[in-house]
Length: 414
Image (cartoon, rainbow, N blue to C red):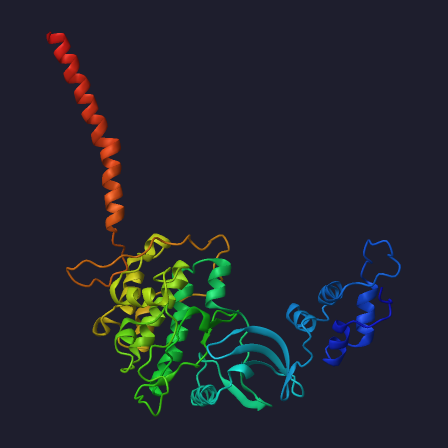
């Protein structure tokens, strides 16, 4: 059995990483109850127990503890100290970090070493250049960029709060006023990007960062491309890129003809999620979702959130118009259309509201023409089931009653 004073691999990693001192580890060890084994006086705490205790004391966060348990010792990138993991971006992991000298908290997107092919590095560089060309309060701002060995990274401002996807998952669908304010902020950022000749191409709830004061910023330009793209200026020219749940039908049909209207449709899908807690077309494969955007109608959002007004749903439907000619033409017009709801003080959505259950699957629109209103088409199989139910519980008992009455009449007449 190991002696009490022996140093485990976890402790070695913790000291080598400069996250903890030996004294801090010893203080944490002293607060842990020994195991209930037979040799309780000499049984040291496990690495997991020690890590959990350090988290309880606030010396580590859960992410740091897990990294140390996995043997990680490097928590720096250039002049930045990595604090925590924020999530996964379109082209890499995103971390919360702090400048070691200035103490400024930032977000760092890292291109993983394993994926740092020459093409990936070029694409990452294009994202850095695209973000650096934009300057708007509703777009996440670039601060720095560089590489540490073979690891390339982009430093942006750190935005406290939740992304819109997590916010809705935590607290349920938003009310019209809250959703309108958030979407208007995003539309302002998009308008600036479009004026600079850039299309975001991946507008979705996960890329909308909502701050505690209610304002929002659009993040992640990893898939952004120029409006006047060609094969030389855009390596993704002619390809379908983005997130299947929010991609526009014209993007699917004509990926070689980029237009800001792609972002307007995706923003409409983001608004749909914000007020319903559901993507427009849940279920199915990526190909199924792409086809649904082209041919199907989403469930009427009023079925998922009865508090939505008809006028509000009309704006959403115009943002989600399948025909680009019928879609709201610009981000500036989106702001104007949502203005009646984007007023009043900010308030977080009530925690009593919960995301609705998964809606029924959308069905194909009839052959009499396209209808962009977000309503539900009753599927043939459901209609057949309703007919059978009516026959079993309605028509059949009536027929049986008639037979009984007729038999009774014949018996009396006999």
